[in-house]
Length: 345
Image (tube, rainbow, N blue to C red; front, side):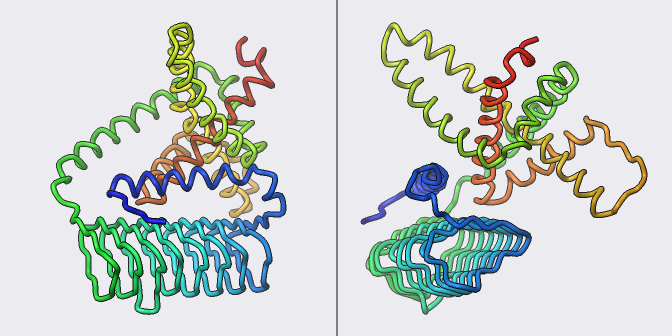
């Protein structure tokens, strides 16, 4: 498999693989998937199965079949017999991976072998003990390679230091994008402020409908995320097919408008659920006996600010956006199906 991707293509591939990964969780053959979630997750015994792990600190100290990991600090100290998909603030890979590794994070250290590597991060270090048997596509701020890439090494970075080897090297420096990035940042800030205002309006004018969707998010977050993602993909396909015919084009236009509106509103409902969760944890942690009341508006603003900051985490923020939008979209669909009369009246 040859990975000849440009910078944009590499990022699109990373996002596509992340989306595909969520879809794979729905297929029948992954029914035995080992799912682990906690503040600290440590795998100290071999697991002859696929592992899905999330947590503040995730450590793999024993062999597993394959791994899908999201966490603050992720450390892989044992061999993985298949593929690894990982997103986190700091990612340390200290053992061999027999399949491919797809990683996105703030700081990534790769010390083990792998078949292929698709990596995006702020600071990326590939050590001398690393052997990539085929190709590697890397995008980041500072990239250092001291390993051995048997195939093609494609790098898009601000700074690139290469003391290792590769079959061929394609390096391009990220230049000339600062003005565009500044413009995008300003536009992003304005968009964020706009979504905050829209959320406040919805909360004030349609509180019953707002809370129906938000309660659906809290009731079944995993189910809503998976179903929401699948429905987003299915909606895009259906709208595209309808738009190719003269008869179906008006229907596709209406469906497309409703689809875009639902996507735009999805993270707003998730923001309130995040704010409520944080407030509940705050009360429990402090063991408050006081009848402390939090205004719904303050809860929404708190969740909105935190979720917006999470969206801006380099590279990993893309995955968080995907999850939040899928969760909100799925909750909207379920809420419409199960509470149609309550929402529309």
